[in-house]
Image 1 (cartoon, rainbow, N blue to C red):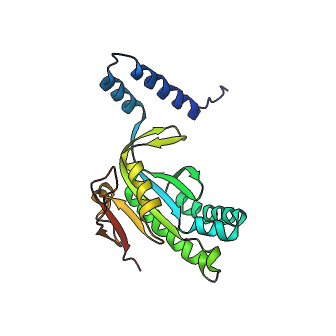
Image 2: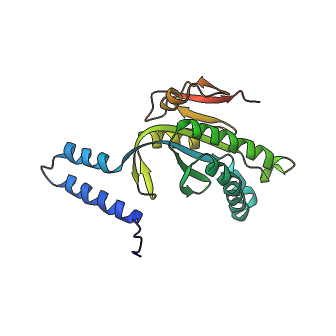
Image 3: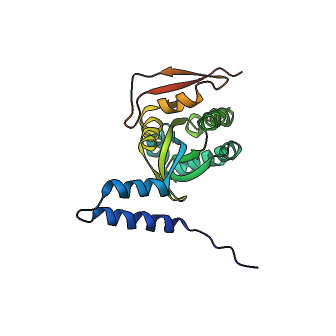
Length: 210
């Protein structure tokens, strides 16, 4: 039997770095190189960025161990939801997760299930032990560097919505998400008076499912 070789994410980063170095050369055809980069790394994904509300305050009041406990517990209860909706957890940064989905509808359904799991988990727990989830979702063509990292306007918009704009229990999405998932059963969209960088508009997801 022939051994199965594995493509490591570092190989993607090395290829990207090679093209960036070529782009930096005087007189380089940047448009052509950019087209090559998008051809290699460009893919359409729904990007979910999550955040846990109140963590800075909780860490200050209850200490870093309590902070870590809540992070690990949130990952434990959310990962089955991510798997059930075919999400790919790309990375975890502090109390935030960056997750990819091929379909915006699956991203929204996953976010709703994650909120349901958080509510169930919180029942009967002290306020400092509760998990308060905030979610931002974007959709569009982004650069995916293996399973190491992602870059793009919709990534930035999802991060801004999830980390800076969404309050506890809110799921905020860009206009590109709504354009594809606007007919999703059990969901309405409320337009917001904010527009995150990288998007043309933003909406709040309102669940109407029983």
